[in-house]
Length: 158
Image 1: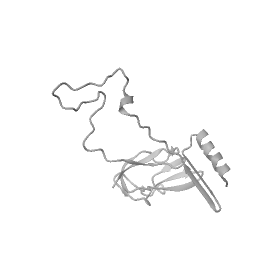
Image 2: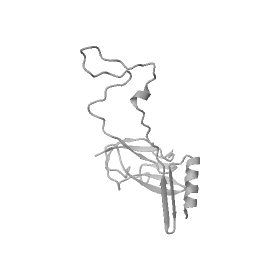
Image 3: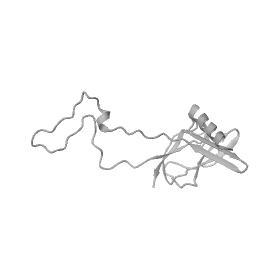
């Protein structure tokens, strides 16, 4: 595969709004990911000119509150990670109908822990956590269809 082919794949990703592409051939493997850059908006530009800056009254401290902004909490909420579906298919919580589920709410997982199966084209694909933490939410019902990128589990890292 040459640079021209890779550029063509990137163009296809853009045109079809794909965020990931993976291709594996005999001795060649390519994995492309597109991220969305965060947009940072300066505070001065986030308010229309109709709201002029207010000066503190004489004798007041130099601190003022900008209208529309809430005070930040002193303790930030712990981050929550999501395990997302890497493909379209059917979600299964257990390896077979009579077996125990791979994980439950409160289960501790590590990057190699299998958390579910996704059946795609009659192939059962094991989905691993890829993170270390504790399962806080299971977002999909057993035996229901899932889409690419759909959140399956929420994990509190530890």
